[in-house]
Length: 356
Image 1 (cartoon, rainbow, N blue to C red):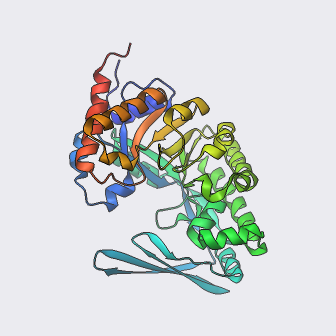
Image 2: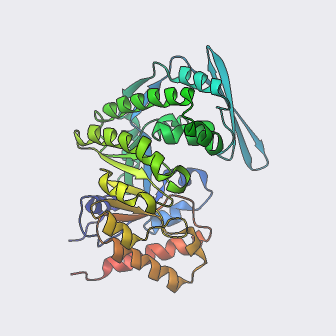
Image 3: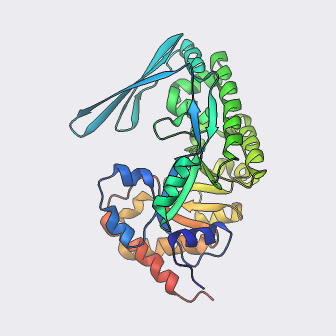
């Protein structure tokens, strides 16, 4: 018997069943930040993935001030991190970092002070609000921190690199194991584990880590040295409470494919075919037979003909077979008026076929 709501269809897939009614979902951030006629797409059957914090975070030694300004359509955000031992400044334009808060070794000390004595308080408030809003139209994934406080969205190794330091400076500092960096990472790692212990007290089953993992940036050696032990500790905490961990891995993963196979991730989020990624869906299913595949069609497919796009989508369905869905998670397709309705129509027609 076919299920009805998007939520039920997705849960059917998450539970490990063969997918006969594939769902296509969009990140809540795009719904909020892209001026698109989303309602027309929801009416066609597009679902929604909401992300909400499962913890409130108190940082007693930090005050943050934020100034927002506009240059035409471009939004500039300047943030000041204020502690009793110094201040840090960062700047972003349209959400993209232009200046990182950590620029020198002494800045690591200021950031460490900002996180000292941090306190995590488990909460179902945001999760409940999201679930009530969504109804049967999608799913809520839990994470650590609110949208404007992303310090624990990622594991500290990833978060410090992406949010605080930037790739170039971080690469030099981690290569020499700069003491100030290592001390910050050690402290934040322990704090993240405490945050996940708090998560076990909440209603959410499915938890997201926004790793933005693409191995050509980190390299397999650093991944195995710093990330794998952290993932093992997180998964041990969550497994004991029946929670599932989904990790955002949107880039090239071939070099650590076997490592991922051994890790207890329940799902690989934003898995993208070539050219963004380097693992096909067929390879992913063979490598990771039990993992849920949150599949993101390549944005380059917008240039394909209708027939070519339909064939690619159906091939992904056949190759994944169980435990999968489609999602808009990296960016809204440029030709969305054509491609999103076409994908929804293709999946709907697939659902109407006899798969017995």
